[in-house]
Length: 444
Image (cartoon, rainbow, N blue to C red; front, side, top):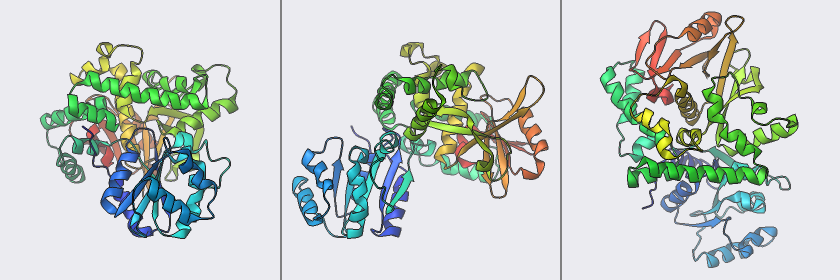
């Protein structure tokens, strides 16, 4: 059974269609296997009289060659209608360029296709290949972009048949209402399932069909293997893949930055930077950059040489953390299900918070500064809100201590707005600090 999940990006695509009326194409960009093609085709079915989907991964050579010469657009449109057995209607039809990175000339042609004005155009593609294949083409200025992520927690709850939980949590958060730790435990149990399954539609579909986490784990391994194949296209020696696989162990060490040279030794700095850029553009990871002077304009003091790396989907990270072991040996599954996650596996929550903040549209930043000669304070995440910054400290337990938050708010008192401790219990206040259950992270 193939599921078509409700996705928030649908409304963004609809807004583009209504606002642009054919004056630009739309590129939906994001990581592999997050559901780009599925949601775009579903949108085409619902919002247009007809559509043609050209999957450039398997399109015939004749279709690919259509974009070598754009002098006769009438011929191109007649040929496409004939080969795809679909009638196109001016201003009522859309042509989808799926996996457009496989045909760079089709992306370049967008400029002239949009100018022609007869149809709408939506492109999808994985960034790891899009950026690799644009060196010799002109990127169309008539192209809008939407970034898409794995299913966020609300979309996951929708997939589980639950449309009530997140609106109720939003009301609770806005009104600063405590509902009690018993209810919070129930909500944390729901969240832990999301942590284990993740937000990749294939993994979610597998869970709905089987309710078997072993089978879900196998589905996630196939997705990770696809990522490894993509990385090998850029680096045949597998070095980018080794950096990707090192993320869980680096987080587990609780270091203040990702150290690529501890994973790959003797790599020239320029080559290392190229590999890190490839990882960033793949959207398989989330970069979190250090800021040296926290202020509202966080990018002004970001240090791109100091960063943390998180896996873009926490469900994939759970599988990646025990990549070389059998499912039965993956203690994350059993520990999380039993709510007995030991401190040395608390990085799973940190990865989840990073994912939830990114899905909500935030860029990730963090800050460290000396506590004494041997220790540092660290704020896990910083958000810019209005004219203030909001520091976030993440706890993988019910502990309410927040020494780093207190020290940060004292040091930068004039710049601080709301301050948050994200943890595993109910919403409540502790002085000026709001203690926020992890499942509300997307509301910050």
